[in-house]
Length: 451
Image (cartoon, rainbow, N blue to C red; front, top):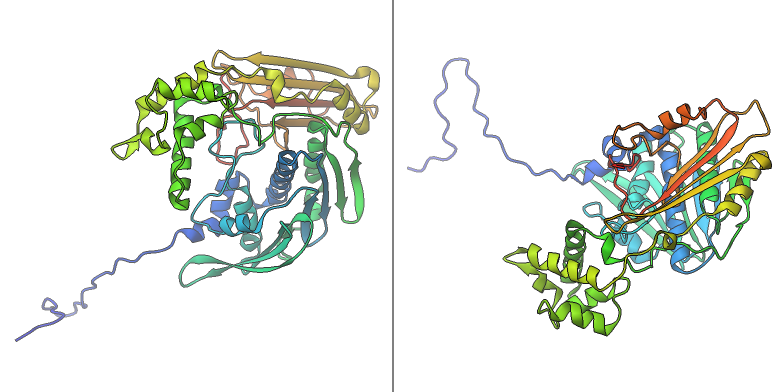
């Protein structure tokens, strides 16, 4: 006699026992939730128009710099759309496809140590998800680049609990990202002051930028580059070994190994070393690799027993540093007195009140830093302070220097002590360029300082 589904005897009033099933639930839906997006970008929905503007301006500037093109950017805002168009190559279709995989990060910045704008590593992914989260039904974003227009619609499979992206492609010249703002969300008019503040901040921090902002049919910002040939450290500049700690170099090596494994490529240690600034010469590569027995070794030889070979990578990093020179701070790029004076005059300062200071430092750790500060008194004595603050040529709408020095006193306190509070009719610009900026939050809104 065969007995199936045998249940223990039940007494009077007892219910049948529940044998629970262990279910698997996709976590991809987390990325299209308000809570997760707030965590990823560091700000709540009320600030998402500013996040969209900042990240798209960062990407547009980087793309133009990589091509050696003086950036010309137009930002257009109406009741239902935020569009950022530029004269760069645009985001290629294959990158759009990879970006819509919500299970991975897609970034050409995150693993390198360099003075990059933002370097969040998932900025476009968060932007694509924002319209859906605000609407609750469907979110739409258009991305043009590489001769293709990608019209993206994000919805959710409520049963499988995962986002679905539908992409319609067509031929289209130009480069732009257009975020369709849902009618159910708050009006974009409500963020005008902060929106224009962020856009103007980018014009202040980037001398090569020509920028137009069309806000509901008006053009409150329309500036030409003061120096179209202005040079700074670009995303395509080779990074120096001196900027890397052991954990940084290991992160980069691991990223290459995973990428090469997926593509079927076998990268050599020599190829890896040649990518660093000052190490493209064959003689230097021979010296570095010969002493470590890595002359013809594949990059995978930097692993041992399924893990990175920490000792060998540490010796490789030391050898790379010994064969190259630390980069001097000026190589990062200076915004400069002339540009800052011109932009502050546009804002409305008394020219005679303008002051400019810069400090170029090279730490014992081989890390350069450029700090520039500009000041001017506004002609309109009834106006309030205009504050432009940024890191690596990316403008912020909140003060990122909330803790400074050993005692943790922030920039805001320093300004108050200097009688430069928010009520004063002045303009202040504070900008820091540094290759290894550390943040205290995931949204990268607060810089960690240990000075």
